[in-house]
Length: 473
Image (cartoon, rainbow, N blue to C red; front, side, top):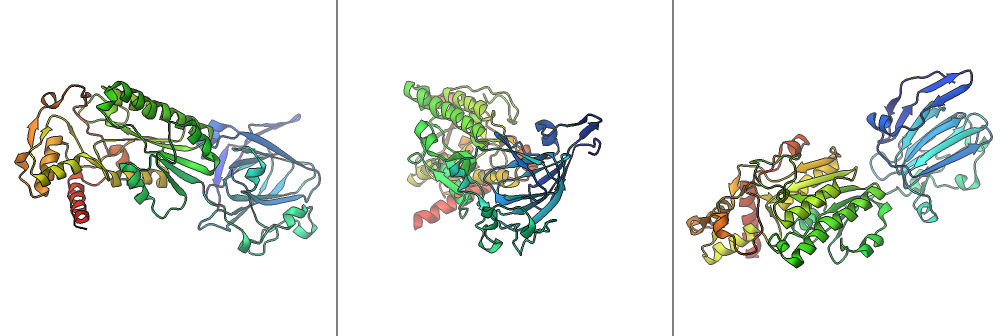
């Protein structure tokens, strides 16, 4: 046994397959090693994969050969005794399908094998003990998702130290298909809940053509229903996007509305968070600038929560629940405009009728067009940006609601002076919810992640042109 060396990770030719060199402390009595150390290994590239089961394979004789098995979970492989020649083949759908990586492992080595990468080994010493952690429980149903490759496949051509014909191999492993007949393992799926609202419709467009994304509106998945949660086969998913929310700000101040707001915006989010933690999912949750009181002119991601009304309070509670998920994107947005009812559509309809609305001029923010919000969410997922909270709205100068209304009138060919600017105090009626004065979100973090939201004023022009074109048929 070699002496101790520094813990290190080494990339391989297969994406996600990572080799680790483990410090082994040896003396006359034997040796000791830290076989798995979550924090240290995460610091050098091991995903926080959440193992739930530990399996050990004892191999009595040199030449025992097992594989090639691609399983529907991640695994962390190491040795307690002996030596192996390991072979890993990417059997996931994608450009690296069929790529081979080989290495010799001793107790001073370990390897992280992502879901869908075929795993095989051949023992080079008698009494080899092969151990692995996995992040899902084995079951007969799970075994149906395995993908296999023949150990003697001519195309991959694993250079076994002991030819397969002379090795100890199970009859089942000898029957596995050649690469040309292998069914690639599909990547885990994404579930979008609340998929029938403005953002849900935009997400449908953003992920159009991606067969691994499932969309569920309220009839398909009620986020307040235990039965809905129990109906989903969560191990098939890696990500859930929560686009569902109770957004009736004034109605939330009523007895019935308060109950609904807390049930949907807080209680259901807590249930999603528990599910995400249990199944190691990435949770994308949509929040609002209403979690702030609006006293700051620009809201950063780390500003303390200071909600004014019931809607904002329920959203803040949902934020706290979502932030407990290790893999989360908490996306705060404001003034959303998309398909369906929204402020811009309402003002355009009023302009067509020649109406003269009163619109508040002492609340300031930026519009967020749902298509751009959806594109920002997709960017975070596609680039695997660091988890955490991100503000996403369109960019440009902050404006008041009255200014937005006047811009809609002007772009609709109607005199913008028909819009009368009034204060919030003058506009608010009995039962109106308090609203933040300033809704401007700091966009530095999302821009730093590589996504630059387009200017809101240009998007407003495009939105109204698209609406006009649609109306003309």
